[in-house]
Amino acid sequence: KTRQKVAELLEMLLTSDGSLRIMLLIEALNTIAECKQLNALSSIGFKQELVEAESDRVNAIYDYSLKNFKRKIQLEEIAAVANISPNSFCRYFKSRTRKTYSQFLIEIRVGQACKLLIENNLSIKQLCYESGFNNFTSFHKYFKMITGKSPLNYQKEFMA
Image 1 (tube, helix red, strand yellow):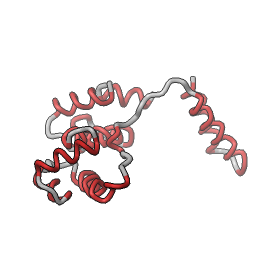
Image 2: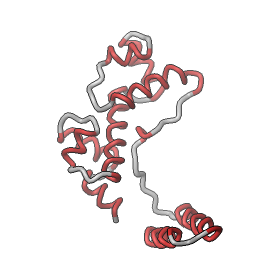
Image 3: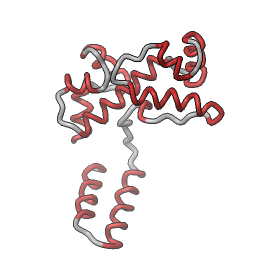
């Protein structure tokens, strides 16, 4: 019901002018805000708020990870970005994020997969590799673990 109402408001918005467009947009946003059925569309890997005191080091790790998540990132490599030893990196990262670096990368990759499912017409297998996973089985497993849905069901639900 909410989806249909918002879709109708947005269609009207496309053909309207001036202040009516603004009013329709506000009404659509209000309809979304009042909706009680909320579903997360992406994982936390899309963007995570960082503690400001550690922001330079964590931002360097985060930026490097976002630029390189499609390939295998070695522990020594990311530790060098943070300018600490691999063992120290594991402790440091977990203490700041409450997750392992591997978990963090998986969340980024699933987030990318969610984005690609919505924005592109790639096959699920192509999408798996474009998101940085190197095999379909682990892609499907982690996607379902994080989103609670299979990639195909996620895409169908979003397009409904």
